Length: 156
Image 1 (cartoon, rainbow, N blue to C red):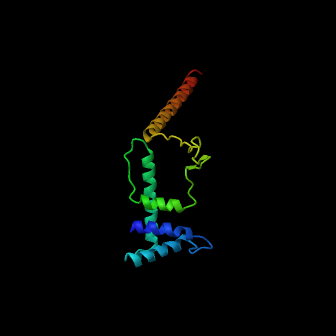
Image 2 (cartoon, rainbow, N blue to C red):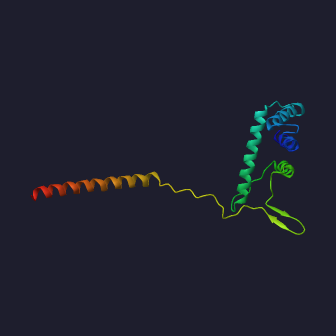
Image 3 (cartoon, helix red, strand yellow):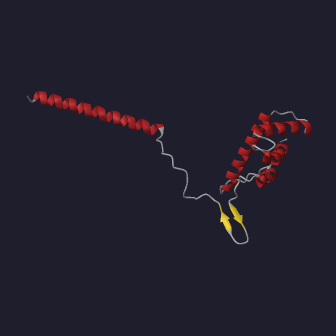
C-alpha cells in the first residue's frame, strides 16, 4: 500500500501547479486515494494518504540522519527504491555534489554556519541552591544592619 502510494506520488508530483493537472497537492492526494481504491481495493481518504506520506518521509529523514552518525547501527529503508525515483524526478532537490567532465560542484552547506547555540539553563537544583544562597546572604545583611543600628543607639 505504501509502495503504491509512493510510486503514484512519484508519477503525479510533476503535475502539480497552476497550469497543470492538479492545482493543489490536495487534488493529487484525492487522485491517489481513488487509484488505490480502484487498483488495490483499499479505501482510504486523501487525508490518511497525506499523513502516511508525511510519516514515511519523517522516518526517511530519521534514517538518513542516523546513518550519517558514526558508531550508530545502520538502519535500512524499505522504501529506498521509491524514494530514489521521487528524488530523481523532483527538481527542487539540489544534490550535494554535481560532477561533469570539467567541474565538480559541491552544494554542501557551510560548516561554519551552524545553528546558534542555546544558552545553558541551570538545573533546578542549582537554581534552588542559588536562590537559597541569595536568601541567606540577604538575611545576614539585614542582621548586620540591625546590629549596627543597635550599636549606634547604645554608643550615644
